Length: 293
Image (cartoon, rainbow, N blue to C red; front, side):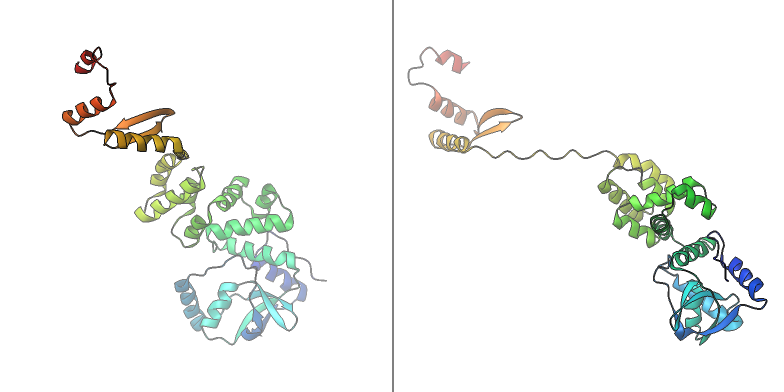
């Protein structure tokens, strides 16, 4: 009976185990047309230049390490070796060496993730999403995942924190516009709006991680929400209209910082005198001295 592969082992360990059990080379040559991709492959993006270089090498030297597949119906699904499969298609190969193993659904994603991590093939966001999928699907803790992957718990936690970034910032990381160091500096900003603004500035000005860290506090100050505009009461508008007609000049009746005010416009001293004459009582003999002052 074939043993289940351990979670912490890579492709080399699986091939060695198969060889020991069968007493012969475990490889098979499988038609590429019969091979299907793993829909849960952690790695979503492949560098086209690197893939073309691998294809050129395969044309000259062949596929030096078999891919790992499992049989599903009449097809073979890739467990590990997605890059070699893609490069082999580019190289025009009709067949590819493969190791066929009986692997259950749970272990497929784990092995694919581990293989990519061992080869440093994942972007920071792909790694974070892979960790999250493993934790959610297997009910693992961060500490448990850290032991399986031979990483520190803090390294797992820091990578998972990238999932807290706004989607637009995550896309910048996936596109290679931001590094994991940039992302950690951006995470120091508490608001989503601030994180997006800082990320956009980093990309626009091609800032270093240190520069991003220095700028983060400036984007951490929450902007004061604008005060809602209080509509002017209709009575104020009517009063302003009556005063404009009476004084023949522009008049505003409004609230300023909780206080009610009347603003009367005038062009010069002559118009001011005219307005004063308009608003003084008809009998103002005693008050003349006060106005003249």
